[in-house]
Length: 287
Image (tube, rainbow, N blue to C red; front, side, top):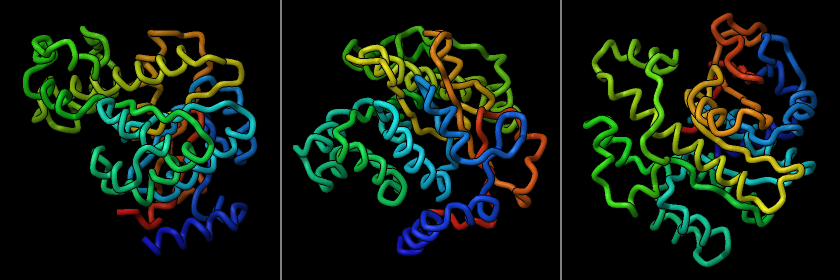
C-alpha cells in the first residue's frame, strides 16, 4: 500500500511530467489531448462513464482527479460498479456518519482493492456531502442468469427484483461486445455468459438514470460512474442501455488501455471511447 500511495503522490506532484511518461490521453480519433481539454468536454456532460482497468493506479488516480475537477464546475452524483444495490444503505450510512469504516467493511461487500482504489472516491463524496450510488446488480443474480438464463429471475419475490433492472431485461446478442465475449471464451461460457454481463450493464444503467432523473436540480449536474472498461467500451454495455432510456442526454465515456509504447495509440484502441487513457504496460499494479 505504501508503494501505491508513494506512486500516486509522485504522479500528483508532477502531472506534466507524468503525462507522456506514464500515460497519454487520446481522443476517440487517436489524437493526443491535454487533461484540460478533456475536462472542458467532460464539464458539458450529464453522465460520464469512467472505464478503468481494475488494478491500474493511473486509472484510480485519474478517477479522483477528474471527479475533483468536475466538482469545481458541476453538481455531482457519484456511482460505481464496485458497490451492489443491496449495499446502498450501508454505503449511505457511512456517508452520513451513522457507521464508521469498520461498519462499512462488515456490512458491505467491499472489493479487495477498496482501501487503495475506491476509498478515496467514497471519502471525497463524504467530505463534500455527495450522493454515492451503489449501482451494480448483486452478483448472486448475475450468477443465476449465467446458470439458468434470464428466466431464472422470473421466480424471484418482488422485494428481490428491486435489486435488478426492470424485467424483462432488454438484450441484443448481436452487440459486438457480447459477441466478442463469446469468442474469447471459445464457446465454453455458453450463450448465458454475455446475458450475465447484460444484467449487470442494464442494472448499472438503470441506477445511473434513476439518480439523474430523481435529482432535484439537473442544471450543471453530472453523474459520474466508475466501472470496468469492458462495461462501456465501444459505446456499448452500460451506454447502450442508457441511450435506450434517453438518447438526448450528453454522455461522455473514458476508457483505460495498456500499451508497450504509449506514444501512439494502437489501431485496436482507437474509437473505444471519447477519451482513452493509454498507460505504460510497465506501470505497477494495485494488486
